[in-house]
Length: 609
Image 1 (tube, rainbow, N blue to C red):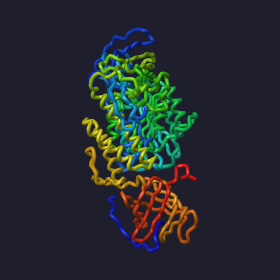
Image 2: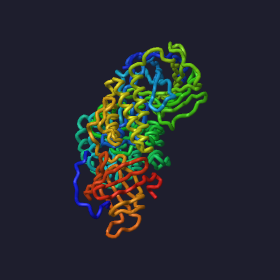
Image 3: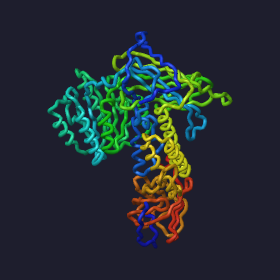
Image 4: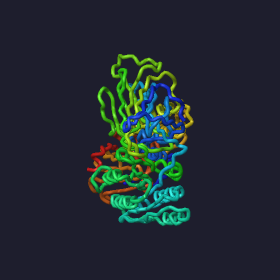
């Protein structure tokens, strides 16, 4: 394939705590179920976070693998999940769940109309020092299909061992395996001080085999959960480990979403653990929409320790349901963005306000929150006075307690900022700016094929993160620096460094070359014709589909390739081409042998035709 009849063999070394928060007024907490003021005051309150995506480990993993992640691989709530964003309140929370807030001026990449950002945080009257999770009835459902062989299944076994080490007498565990058939590998087993070694041996015996039938595995898992739930005094939770993309498109009774929704009504929540799953925001949105749903992704053993070694108790402990927040701006402002809940959950509330429902609030090791940006509804109106006297927005929260089923409400009035933002609000604003910038850079790269634009956006982000000076942001500087390095190479800026980001490392990933290309012109003696299709993927596979038969050439040639900023080499054929991309057109050329191919990128809809 691609081979000139005059080409000789060639080789190439490819370079290839929160402080007291200013700017908000009093928080009015009244229990609507009783109509009485709750006076209990707790200083060491537990952390609270919304359900759904809890990290962006898949996005980070793609960047570490020297690929530019797709924009839908990223969620704001997942990015914020790695950080404690608790905001201070002017008075302690006196009930199960409260809302508080703080405002600051903001400037976001690509969003010039945003003038203010309001952080809406959660509080609770539950003392973290006294809180302990309830006994856990855990049903682990494990995908053991062929694709899980090797490191994915090894990561699952490591995760289960970590879980078992943290289970206590009174907890219960079951393990369901699914491949081409689904069955209980470990029957419901009460944990004792003496039987953990037996459970660990059962985990070690999990081996990969068979095809994938996720719905059948989930059905056995839920049947096990419902049966073992009877008489168990504690919480029952299912935990799905898989490297596949769950079917979130269907909502019938036999589908992934249908079963999750039905089980949530029966008190069985679902934690989805991805170990290679092609995570995207659609999956996060669906899981976020189900009561008791949350989502984690494990890249490696460090993630296993970070998730199960620290977060097991909180990730299985639900605090409140049907958490509805209504945000109404004042003083000529309108809501221009909401970050921390999937966009599908937003509804208009009139007068430029919005509302959204978070199905579940969990206990958490890190405090969560929602961030709202505001734009001027009338451009000529002045900004409110910066003395803390003028209200900016009101936030109203209602919820149902997961602890006792009671309903309650909380309200906060957030004033225009009159001083520097608290450390956590500032951190949150930087994370939202990063989220907006990463989405823009990924969209420029993949949707617009604008590598230069993506590079310039990441350059701005790198500078912003460097100027923030917050040591907590090192993972973000590493992430943006990695992507910056890749786009710098691809856009011809490989020798540059900006914003403190060094570009010494050179990636080996295909990135921009990946896609489906139609050959529009051929020059030189080569076994490829106009109209042929060239398919290149992110796993460095390349395939040529010949439109018309070529004598002595397979109609469907396959190879693997490596690429740097200017060259691509076919490994098996040992053929080297230079490449250049402009918009939707790519040129592959070998000046030594006078061979040139002109290609046009096919739209996604055409690729499957």
